[in-house]
Image 1: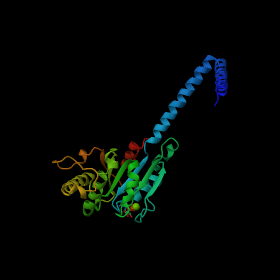
Image 2: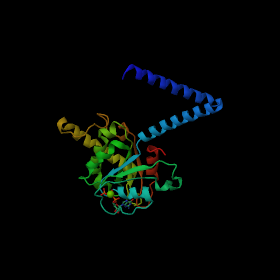
Image 3: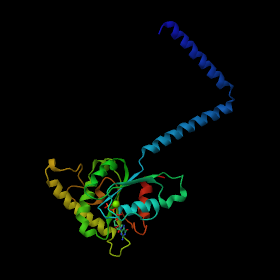
Image 4: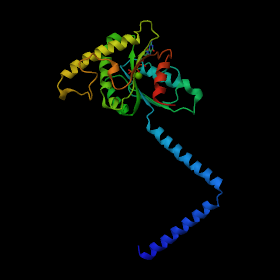
Length: 260
Ligand SMILES: Nc1nc2c(ncn2[C@@H]2O[C@H](COP(=O)(O)OP(=O)(O)OP(=O)(O)O)[C@@H](O)[C@H]2O)c(=O)[nH]1
Ligand SMILES: [Mg+2]
């Protein structure tokens, strides 16, 4: 570009600046203050919106097959447990307002709930969702708990040692489901048994050579019996029944981690 053109551009820019200044000067002072304030609020709202979008709204339901994840999923979304009768072959996911909050629709943030089937072949799907999880719900069958204690502990151990969970300190809810049955074990009993079983797993797994360990992080405090309180992420124990729709503790956990 030759010098003459640059000069012309400079003059043109100066003209535009002068015109803009003149335009602003014509606006009464009060209006100017008002416009400035409007501008300030617009920027502030934009920042809040951007920040809100970066926090996740994903809640992952995991647990052994038959523990009741799909029942809970439909209770959360529709307030009924339909379609939960077959073993899921695909992750079930949807974004919605919790059924119990339907009357506040429009004011609340959607929750993205993912129900990952418990079948061992489908569990790797969990890795697709964990990195974006705001919370993990590990569902346990409180009725058939004892025969499933070992596999449930193994699955839970796997989740609690994943980098995506440990690094981001993703909160985990241990949800003792099916409490509508009188034969259901208490949440306290289940917590203690899971801790004991994880303690055994921890000992056997750390004895394996480093090369064979697939777990990304170790659990607990070396030399002390394992307790969930030793984990860096928050681990809460609660009860539910997907069958009769007793899911208030689950909803509380969701809303604590996906702010409205
Ligand atoms: N008594 C009782 N039974 C339940 C409850 N929730 C689920 N069930 C029973 O457990 C079965 C399995 O429930 P699902 O929700 O399909 O289990 P799931 O965890 O999704 O299982 P997968 O899809 O195989 O991983 C259901 O067919 C019900 O018979 C509950 O709260 N109470
Ligand atoms: Mg299912």
